[in-house]
Length: 112
Image (cartoon, rainbow, N blue to C red):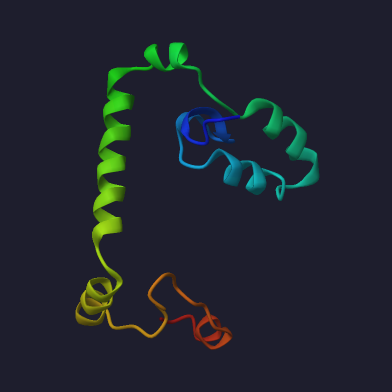
């Protein structure tokens, strides 16, 4: 397969059509799903041909473009700026700059 991203059908179990950013990564994720789901998920999940995309509603295509623009904006927001913003507006110790780190202490207390 030459294309690795595009509109896909059955990328996730609860969404018919969505944009797939990384086909190979999604296949890898599917292979980690419960064993009884893997074969069906791999059989059903596929990137759509151009002809099928032409029949998608314009609103869905516009939504995808808006999401792509949002993602690009997020990528341009540097780590230093993100950290500075986070420190000002939240400042928690649970955020490591890329994700929330859960500790057993926080889970036991039930507090952030």
